[in-house]
Image (cartoon, rainbow, N blue to C red; front, side, top):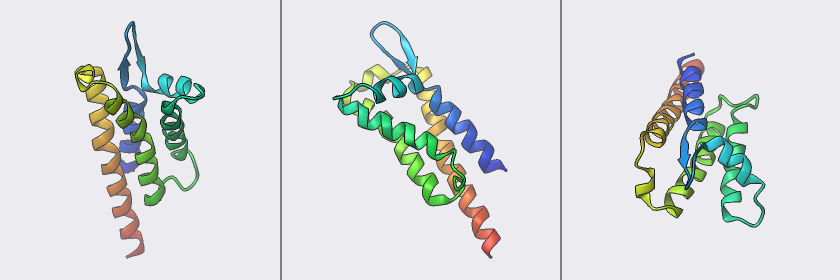
Amino acid sequence: MAATILKTVSILAYLFIILMGTMTAIPLVIWLLFTAFDFGNLDQIFAVLGIFGILLNLVKWKNNVPPAILSFLMMLSPVISRIIQVPFEQFNYLLFQIPLAIFIIGYPVSIILTAKRQKEKTA
């Protein structure tokens, strides 16, 4: 139960990571949706991976460890891509750092708790 709540909070934090633009800030989920349909752009690949990572959390076997790890890596890829492409100083604001920290800490912890629970069931 705790793993499910932690995973849900982590995913919500991921969706509310704010990316600062030149004029306005937008949530990461909006950036993912618009960039996924921006054909001919390298970011499109990472946006699609991020969306698939989110959708992977909605399938029936989402509580298995390998799909959860794959989902985490897929969701992390667009964030890493943005950090690599844009100067790191542009991410020095709390609306980016706090949700990202919640996601990066909370999601792996939920995977560990899930693995521990599955191990206890089989033992």
